[in-house]
Length: 440
Image (cartoon, rainbow, N blue to C red; front, side):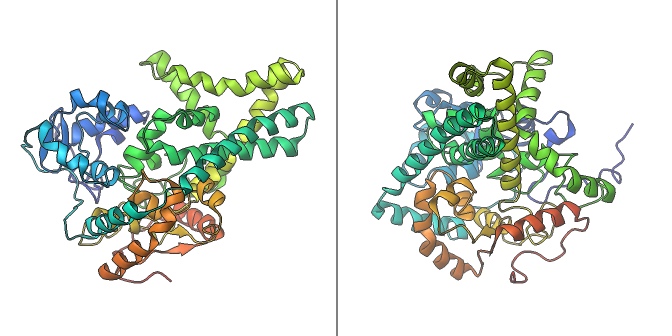
């Protein structure tokens, strides 16, 4: 039977020629996202950058950032990833060694990265700035991360020994902050710090896919795995085909519950899929058990009390992580989501600014910037840079925005909380493209 074209007409993404394949199969995971991307990206089993195909197989083991980035992206289009993860020109100079041929079909994605466009202009200025920059702030970031990590174990121990919900809440906050601070290291070369993310029961490998490979490149689109993974419980894409009005109201009501079980759901899903489909577990998943083991061996309260205390801490940390993460920068009716009218200029950097309203209330604190996804626009544009460095790049960003007549929007956290709930309820697509009207 021929497909009903009229019924499927709504299955369109504003940033690509095709509707993402991974959304047509459940459950949605990082692995299914990569499989769908292999089917959609016209990379012919190789690595695609613009309209050329490269074979990076032999380079994976020598990749300075780690083999993960090369092995995981085989068979996909890595154009935007390549540009945003390599600020210096050295990587570009090496590409010719691995070139195989021209791609036989056009790119699936509509983004542009023209030399005289917004992103590449900004990138050149940032490159020059970084050559003169003092990188001492990265040491502060490392110190903050280590201090937060130690506080997880300290507060967990005290909360368990004293049977104090207040101190366990501080431990949960510290656990959340470990996750958000470790996010700084997801995009960088492999280090021991990325493994600390697994204390949450989530796994840094899965989040490198959903966050670094998917969300950072295709923010707020149907290709954004971090949006799709929450459906049908929470849906930010406007349009009744994605969620009815009733479903959207339910999502607002149940969102706190979703936050609470976020950490535990990730490990349970990977356990179930490993049993019924294929193994998604790694040796470092055992890191998640180091906290309850520490509590059992050091507190003397017994196994049951240690496990109960641990789960309380995990649930509190999960709630804070979900609450902070999903109200950080991306969801507000004034922010571009797939289906809304888009700029005529599909410059990838402009698209990133259109999908973000930054938090202006935390810029005064390096700790809050690190733990609450601060400097969000610059982080999306240059994800491999330490959060401590990003604040020094505002002169270059403002100069480039002025030349291209764009703005960096900012509100406080309360504005984001309200905006996220309004976005969950939004049914209608914005007919006005970003840049047509200044944000007030």
